[in-house]
Image 1: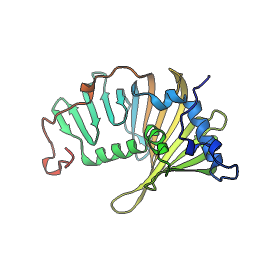
Image 2 (image 1 turned 90 degrees about the horizontal axis):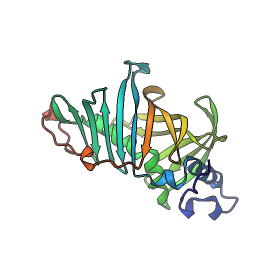
Image 3 (image 1 turned 30 degrees about the vertical axis):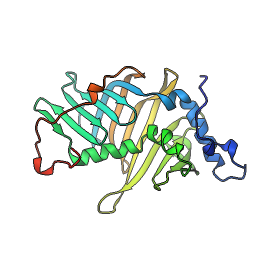
Image 4 (image 1 turned 180 degrees about the vertical axis):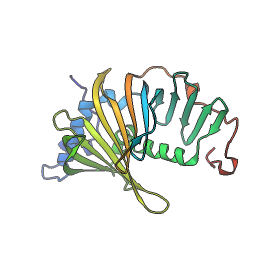
Amino acid sequence: MVAQEASVPRSQTSASQPAKDPGAKARTLLDSMLKALGGQAFLSYETMAQQGRTYSFYQGEPSGTGTLFWRFWRYPDKERIELTKDRDVVYIHNGDRGYEVTFKGTAPEEDKLLDEFIRRRQHSMEIVTREWLKDPATIVLYVGTAVADQKFVEQISIINARNDQVTISIDPLTNLPIRKSFTWRDEERYKNEETEVYANYRQVQGIMTPFTISRLKDGLMASQRFLSSVQFNTPIEMAKFEAKTTYDPFPSRRSKKQ
């Protein structure tokens, strides 16, 4: 594959730093990863449409037989997921608002679920590579080697100006990311770790795309998605991301965001 050159801020590239810079190795790995993912094609796609099957887990164990899903995404903060073969269960996220659509109508998403979604979005590969790296205050560090998904990897950490951190494990043979993780503290100050594992990469429209995505919470499997098709930069109507609450099953706990 001949990938386009990744557009990384000059302050982030190894070419602009002395060889003795301890972050030079991390920036070299980062540049190689972005190039392997597709360079500008990866860094600039605006929409994505996916189809596949998703599985849920409870305490690390499968909690069902899986269900069909359709996902529509628009950068930077819009997403729609349709579930079941009839596509009659829908989750919509638009900015800081979330909705659940069923046969009962449209309800605001529970605060806990909405907070979890926004947290994952803020640490997504798209946000980290497109927004964090634009900030000259962002730091890229080499963490060392490890084993991820039964593969030897090299790890880098990207730390933004708010001291928020994402660690990416990179396969040195392909330069593709195998795992991405971040930690956060809840209201009781307990430390939580969320991880995504990427596998079964295929090239789609010049972008190396993982067709298997696993999500873990504190080391336990939380969900898995197996994609059957992916398309980038397809027209997606803005109406898909619009919703209006028609009922609220928990009015006393309605989010102030709604």
